[in-house]
Length: 136
Image 1 (tube, rainbow, N blue to C red):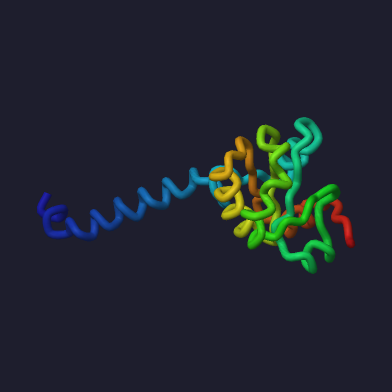
Image 2 (image 1 turned 135 degrees about the vertical axis):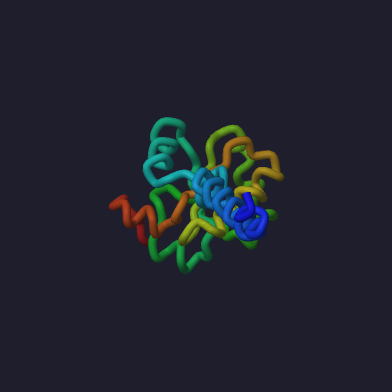
């Protein structure tokens, strides 16, 4: 008991850091809306999900998912009307590595989109999974 009293700060730090480590293992990287390339493929094939690439036009032309629409994140607010007919369908947002698309998910949710997802790992993860990219 004396050991605990003399080292209470160290014990508290160990418990707190262990708790944070434990809780972070349950969170999905990319947020609660992140989907893997496999999950994205399932949404596209089974639920006719709409894919929106939020990268700039040059990056989009270098390689993108088939049938993806390019709406850069910076212009997403003013161009969201182009996606209004997809408000009740799944919309998968894609960027290079998943960070911009996660932020874009929040924007579309605020605009009333019911089912928005971010491709975890972005185009990079899609390509690494051996899935095809379209050029042009």
